[in-house]
Image (cartoon, rainbow, N blue to C red):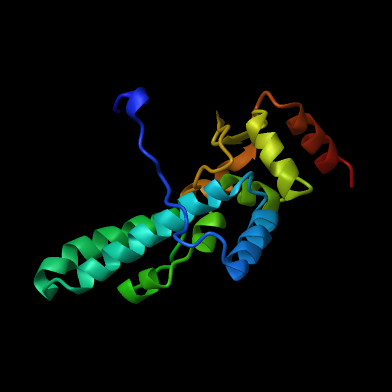
Length: 171
């Protein structure tokens, strides 16, 4: 796991951070997905860049060598829900940070209707009201896998679950 005093950065900041178009685009994305700061966005941009780089390096390999690694990479991204079934390496080259932002727990809680706004979704997660398959998750940046998406709900000990039951009971 490593020494906590020697942790590494999980993101790379932009080389030219003061480009006006970039700043405007980043602020729009921060508001749309309810991110706390640009570092959360940069982490996912770095992750997308990593997968694109892996796909480019696989394209350079001979076909017999790349088959197994290509299948493993595609399977990982399909399980994560970033790519659809039957995707190819060319689809990986088109990945952006927004593909990963759609898979964050905060976004899924909001889209499933468990919260009225994207900011409320973040607060519910941080305060421990959201669970996946009964296991409480307190990180809004948790990337939800495709099979976990239907298991996202209120935590069993959350007062919101009683509110949800009451709403379902009234016609």
